[in-house]
Amino acid sequence: MIRLLIVPAVIFLISCGSKNENSNSKSTDAYQADTVIGSKAITNELAGSVYRKRATAYFVIIDRDTSSFWPTFIETNEGRITIIIRLRPEYTYQQQLNSIALILPHAAKSYNLDSLSSLSLGRLYTSGDLAIELTNQYVQTFGEKPGIPTSEYDDISNFLLNSKLAHDFDKLFERYNSHVSKIGVEKVFFTDRDYLYQVSKIETDTSNTSKKILDCMTWIQFDQIVHD
Image (cartoon, rainbow, N blue to C red; front, side):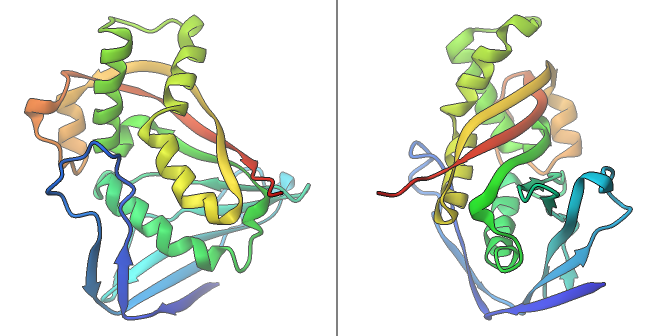
C-alpha cells in the first residue's frame, strides 16, 4: 500500500558540502513546487523478511514526477533500525542527500531513528561526485596504487570516517541523536573514470578527476549520542 504525505510548498534543500567547496557555489537552494513524500510497505521485495519486523520505502514526488530514489527503512525483530540506500546514477549525490533530508522527518514518525544502527550505501562509485572527491583525498593520503590489499581495509575505513562522507551523514542524523561511528568497506578496487561519467550524473569537471575512481561496498554504523 502506497501512502502520500504533502510537504509544504516551499522546500529548502540543504547543502552538506565540505568547508573547502568553491565559495561561489550555492549553499542553499529553494524552489516552489508541489512536493509529496510517498511511502510503500515492503514485504517480499526485500530479502531477509524472517529477521525484520517491518520495512518501508520512502520517495519524493515533485510536480507529479516520482523519484526513482527509494531509501528503505527497516525495523529488525530486536528493535534496531537500519536503512538501505541504493544511490541512483541519474541523480547527483547532492540531489539524493536533499531527498534524504526531506524524507527523514516523515520516516521518523514511524521509525525510532534514535535506535539507528546502520545504513547500507552499496557501491561507492554510485555516489558520483562524492566518489571523485574521496578518490582525490585518498590519492593525496596514500598515493596512487594499482590495487588495494585487504590488509589496508582498516586504513581505508579510518580514512572514510574522517571524510566528507562521514560529515554529511553526521549532519543528516545528528537531530536524531545518532552519529557515525564506523564506515565499513569490502571488495575495494579502482573503477574507470570514463565508466563513472557514462553511467552517473556528475557535476565535477573531468580536469579535477583521477583516471581511476575508488570503489567498494560501503556501509555506515551509528552510535547514539548521549546527552548529559
